[in-house]
Length: 137
Image (cartoon, rainbow, N blue to C red):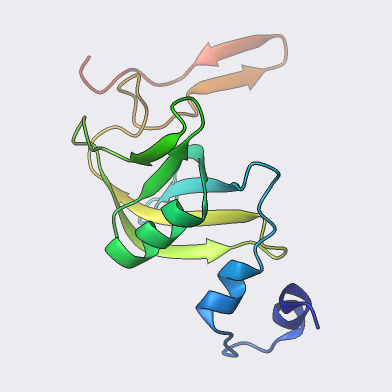
């Protein structure tokens, strides 16, 4: 039986081996999975990025979030140069394993613009409004 079907039908508290679940992730054609970072205590969605097998494994083992940079084609350890790190609090996979939710403790702004979240462009009918300023303003 497919592990995702097993998990879908599992009762609360049932477990499956992590290695088997990770090996069953339906990585996209580029070997990536969507990763959503959420501030663990406020619930604010901070950013969306991508992870490959190595980035996900490193994140789970080290507790510091690591992504795959599609533009640079290399591992991207969040905050490595800026100091705005993400400490992993909890990781969750969605029901069919094609997205991972990372509940993190964000240190400093999450967005490269200096804003707390990458989702600062609010869509209002016919306009897009910038709803947060960079933290250094």
